[in-house]
Image 1 (cartoon, one colour):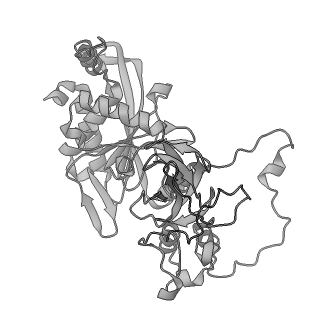
Image 2 (cartoon, one colour):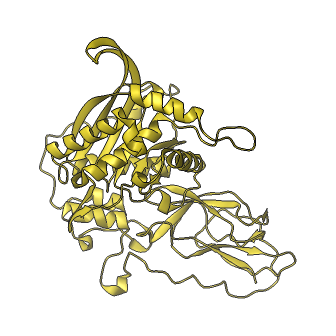
Image 3 (cartoon, one colour):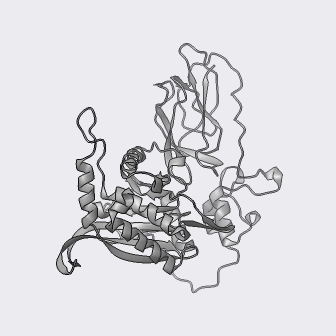
Length: 418
C-alpha cells in the first residue's frame, strides 16, 4: 500500500495551513526523513520530512493554497506498486499526468478537529488569527463577510471591517502609492515571505496590546570573562582532541537570567485573561536570526542545567533553527527571552516582548570603559542590558529587582556554578 503524506498539525491551534514550497516533484524518488515540503503556519515555517522511502506520486495541492490539517497532499509508492489516480484539491497549472494503472476514487481526507466551525453549525467559519483579532476589536463574526475558501473569514477581512460608516471628510486627491514616490527602475521589489509577514503582524500586535516599559543597567564582565577563560581552557577533549564545549558570554547570560527568575519568582509569569500564570521553571527563549526572519528556541528549565549543557543545547538549537528543522515544541512557550546583539557591536537597545512572555532581555556588547573598581579608576569591560517588561504582569519595582538579581549572577559568576 502507498504511504499517505498529509498536511500535519504543527501548532496546537492550527486548523489549516499552506505548503509554501515543494522540494520534490511528481515521480521523484525520496528517502525516508528527507524534506519534501515546507509548511507555513501563523507562527513560522518548517520543513516536513518523508514518512517513508519511495516515489512521490499523486501530489494533490499546489504551493500557497490554504487546506485543512490532515488533508492528503501526496502518496509515496514502492517500486513497481500500482499508482492510484487522484485529483488536485484546487485548480493548478496543467502538468503531465502520471500513468494511471487503476481508476478508483482517491483516498478520503483524514478527519481532523477544525477550529473553524462549518456553516451547518450556525457559526461563522474563520481562521484562528481572524477570531483573535475579532475578539480584540469587539466584533461579531457574523457581521463580517469572509473572502477565503468557502467564505472563511481571514484576518484581513477583520482588519478592513468597519462597524460604522467613516465620518465625512473633505474630498482630497488620493494619497500616492508608496512606489509612486520613487523612480521606476530605481528599486527592486522583494515579495514578503509568509514568515516575515507573520513576524510583522505579531510584533505590531505586541506593541499595540502589551504595555511595555524598559529598565537598563550596566554589568561588569571582569569576573565572568576570567571564569569563562578558565572553564574553556579546562574543557574535556573529544577523540579528535577538540574541546567538548566552548562557553560563550550568551551561555552565562541565559543561566544568569534563569537563576534570577528563580530568585524573583514574581517576574517569572505570563499574563492571561484568566489570571497570571506563575511558572515553576525558567524556560528561556533565545532569539536566533535566520534567513527571512527569526526563531526563538527555548532552553527548558535553564536554571537546572550546567553552563556546558546550555552551551551544547543552544548550539544544536541554533543550527537547526537556521535550517528550519526545529519541532514546534522547541520554540513554543517559554517564560522569558534573550535577544543578544552584542556580537554585532550594538552597545544598547530595547527589544519587543514576544508573547506570551512578560519580559525580554536585550543584551549589548562588552565595551571597555573607565570605571571605578576597588577604589580606583581603571578600564573595565562592561555590558549594558535592557529589560522590557509587560506592565500588566510585572511592575517597575519587580522588574528592577529581577534585573538587579541578573547583574548579581553576572558579576559573581561563581554563584552560577554552585
